[in-house]
Length: 324
Image (cartoon, rainbow, N blue to C red):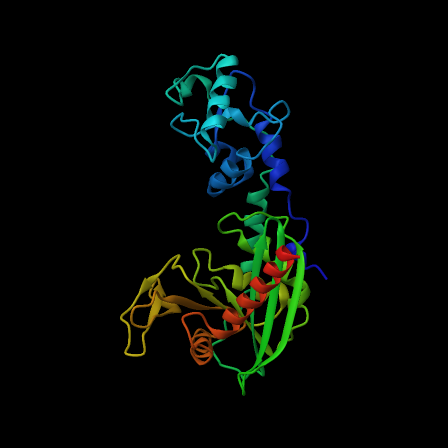
């Protein structure tokens, strides 16, 4: 079953091509302007990736997309850059030393677009209101970990389930599908959760899902772990390797510290001697305190066991598929 918050996802590749196709001959635009037309400037790196692919320049004039300072740039080789300069010159645009010389006179920004990323951001804001962080702890029978490994556009999802009493693995769940939505920062849930959905549907409310990503310790208080909890209707904990927001307090002798936003504790940093910390926060339907205690209980290494084992299982599935 596909969840409403994960349905009707846009084809960003096609939308980028439609946007770029609007740049007329004799004009250029920038990666950032295409990203803005897509709905969010944060997608500029993804735009650069798309324009570096082997696309028919007669249909999609990717050579007309340059950097803000006029450099031809992008993820292209020297031969491609030379070809890009040749095409621009043939259209009457001056290029010297790998740079468009008169950006102001040639810049096109008047795009028509459905702004799909803006629509997805509004969807996130609506879902964020459904996140519930209780103050009271609850006993759970099972703890699960999830991870996804990628090979091109193929995604290998794995979920492992441990018994909270014995700590032993009781289930191993796997699924393979296409990852049609690309990686764009802060939109990770739309890439990963559709792949994970068939496995998450086999979990129940007595299971905590530990996810490799942020929960409410996120600039929007709605990281991928929070989205997973709301979409799948289960308690989730976010375990991230990068701090996106907040102020870290003093570390205790146990190697843990509170992470505060506006003086409110919404997560914790965990780090032993010589280790980079991980950042733990509730995603949905579990308290800040219980999120910390659960991760601490199921940690033997830097990465908690449920996520670590799921990561190994997903990677094994990817390697097996490649070696077939």
